Image 1 (cartoon, one colour):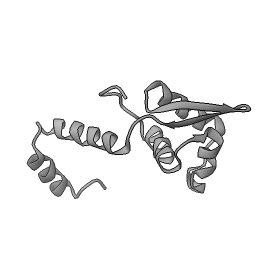
Image 2 (tube, helix red, strand yellow):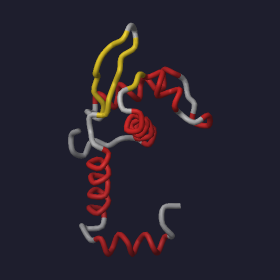
Image 3 (cartoon, one colour):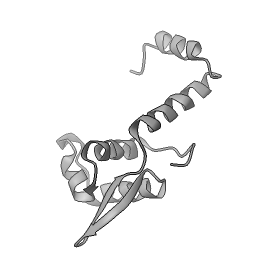
Image 4 (cartoon, helix red, strand yellow):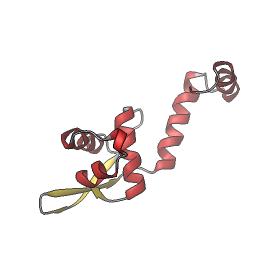
Length: 108
């Protein structure tokens, strides 16, 4: 995945499903989403194609009309990149980052 290629919250959610399932079709990803996160098939399909364009997913094979995708990036690497980006916002200082989290009460 190209550095600084940002993923939306929805894209990240789909990528997380791929990390859990491995190789899967759009339909399998849609079916794996919790009921409260169910969206239209075409919405998931769009997100999957966007993730492929960004280099986060790759096509592995086609079975009938179903295209199977698999993660192209490692979950640990992706998270490290996010932490790195976050640290950059605080001048590379873990202390400032932690201090800010404590002041604001974390993420929520």
